[in-house]
Length: 371
Image (tube, rainbow, N blue to C red; front, side, top):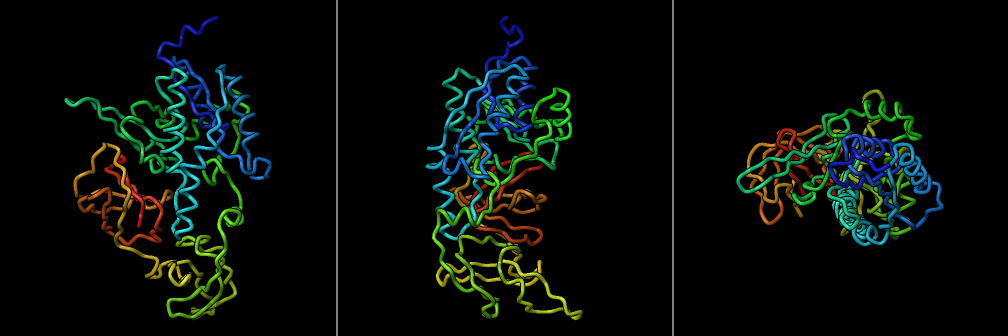
């Protein structure tokens, strides 16, 4: 029997095999959309490794589609992912920066290659299981789309979506933006979805959870060099600046070096604080609040603004990493696709290559790459 409830047109849902995208598909079907699930395969280098879960993810996504009664297809974007995301990822690491592949993956794969493919399948819109919201404001010049934080602030993913354009937001639905994660789990359990208790995935977008240095070693050469203190004392040897990120505490290999000690004989932990590419030197400091780890301002480039134009100079808030509270700041006038931020309070381990994302309350304005 034909689905007489599907009156809102076709929407293609990116179904990853996880609980969030599964509940997204069910919600849209309940709302009267003609739902088609699309499973994206974007990584092929080591499908047989213990860290690549794509085979199981596909089985989970197909099982969910069967339970909720929607069709699902698999599509391979591995070539696009390698060209548009992973090549840039390696270039940035080689240059001593720490990129955020999830940001680029969303802009280039999930909301570009996937969106284009969905349109070929006759879709009017796409949907994903991201925790964010889209608001449409009608104006004299036509509709204006805003990207908003999710109601569940602890799960909000607008940070990763800040490079989306007006055209992309106009065709995108985020059904989970109004829900809390606990509600999503309850829905999955009430429906008897086979992945209702599945753990959330973390790690690199589409590559998954794996020992990171070991993974990078396969693609980037090692360039050992000295690990020094601000005073110039050599306290160890690093394996290559690409393998370390600012603020990193674990994996430095200098745990036995006491350095500066407190009165009680204990010592502060070591943190990665700076990279000197010219001398191939990694600088480490002791103590979470060392001055080298604190920064009052930043410069960003390669900016992308949700509204299509840069915001006016003024008071906003910003995040310099995903798991961070909004920090109050002042935006200096954005110029040539870049901008400067001055923070009310020093920010910890501001990392070149990561994204600085600007907010006006719940509205995500866009952002750029920290330099």
